[in-house]
Image (cartoon, rainbow, N blue to C red; front, side, top):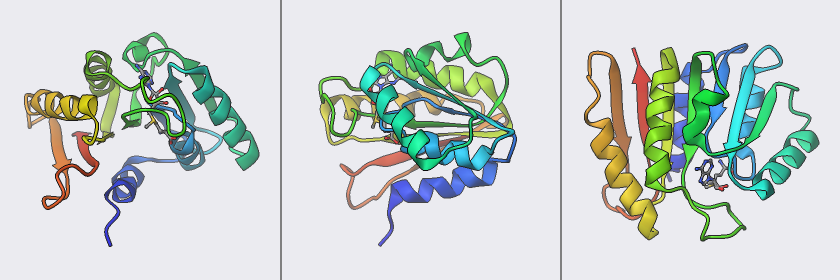
Length: 183
Ligand SMILES: C[S@@+](CC[C@H](N)C(=O)[O-])C[C@H]1O[C@@H](n2cnc3c(N)ncnc32)[C@H](O)[C@@H]1O
């Protein structure tokens, strides 16, 4: 059966090109960072953010073990400060909201910083770039984040920015994702 969070990689792959710049806004254990690093290749660039040292350690170990190209920068800071670090247009930005799998569940993404991070990500998007935002509404802050992100994304002008939501209609508490594309 359909795995919605695997399906979203289909959209990402349509936008990624070898040599381009991508951002992993929520590094966690580094699976998305590794995916992006391989997809953009040694001529490309990946910036990955997390506020927890445990995430940076786990991601560095994963990338090294997997033999990822030397094209990534791991940044211990909040993703809403992305513009302090990323100065070029980005083709793809991935958000996988929530808490670090296997880590401290009290440290989770919060709408106060997630919304400015998404807005900064939209501003950094190259033409034909996209953001993917995976939301986990099964915990309280995840539900709030999902509603506020949807409200914000609904306000972008459709002639410049397309925003869409993908969810299971008969399982509304399951994870879902938003797609943002710049034309
Ligand atoms: C669901 S995990 C990400 C999973 C990850 N993409 C992977 O492939 O393993 C969410 C991560 O977001 C991080 N996070 C929470 N608030 C953040 C913030 N303000 N800026 C950057 N990362 C944040 C958490 O520490 C956690 O590691």
